Length: 226
Length: 137
Ligand code: SF4
Ligand code: SF4
Ligand code: FES
Image 1 (cartoon, each protein chain N blue to C red):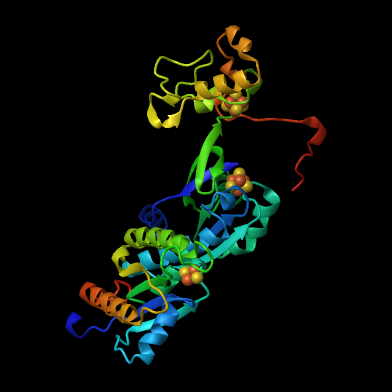
Image 2 (cartoon, rainbow over the protein chains, first blue to last red; image 1 turned 90 degrees about the vertical axis):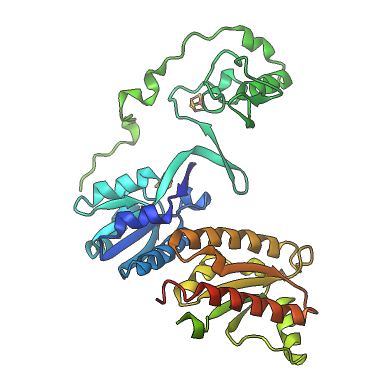
């Protein structure tokens, strides 16, 4: 899922300080699970903002709401009436959600309450880790199911660098060496011989460097009629 | 103005300990400042960040959470969870500009009536020193 974290209150305050009526919209999916921007966090953000603005002698009206998914039109569209009545929107979804609101409500300024950090999972309760960088050409089958692009600091594809020590990465002693993990797992699987095949430079044309990526599937495609 | 300032303080008290201690302080006829308004909780593990924020939003000058001694929570670790939430709420209060020092976590047992009175005095003095909440100014 998408992992995000709340921006500092003063940063959010500065974005919405000029508006009288602001709709704060959370998302019930990824950012609820990572406890950054769901229903409950919308309440916390709103309360913090009301107080921070009151200190500045401002009393804006903050309307709290949360929808199932901010990255799907059918849920976004349910906000229409509420959006009509406000001066600005504060979205506490990931960047995808913020942009969906901006696209659907072109006449309303939309601001992000969160920093979208990465794609990952809660490894422990309260500890999130990045495990995939969305390269568009998954090689996990070659790496024992552990991604060297996301989990090796240098994104090396043919084994560790010389900085791997006692299982830790030279970039930080807190960080596991992705390649040590790959080695360990391939050893368990009796597949160490896989490492003898040298991989040629990866085809990065599926990565994001060509700008916005799009995916089309004719079998499920329906032209939007409205 | 601060000289005559009587702070409003909300104390979130666990039913099994601090609330009992408050009761005991009463039967022992111990004096403690009338500034402290008690909210009884089944366990401090019930404390949510929004409760703490709302106390301030609704005009409190200070607040504290009082739970069982560490290791003695009747729900195992409700008081440890409360301690962490208090720490996060303190950070948020700092960010907002209210100041995290207006919020604190305490631990006590039901037999510690005098400690309950002492904590109430301690927090009242602290908040009196800090002056009214910036929201009330
Ligand atoms: S808007 Fe973002 S956080 Fe919400 S469901 Fe979509 S991807 Fe997940
Ligand atoms: S190889 Fe690419 S798609 Fe597969 S996990 Fe790594 S970044 Fe993600
Ligand atoms: S029962 Fe008292 S703090 Fe949990």
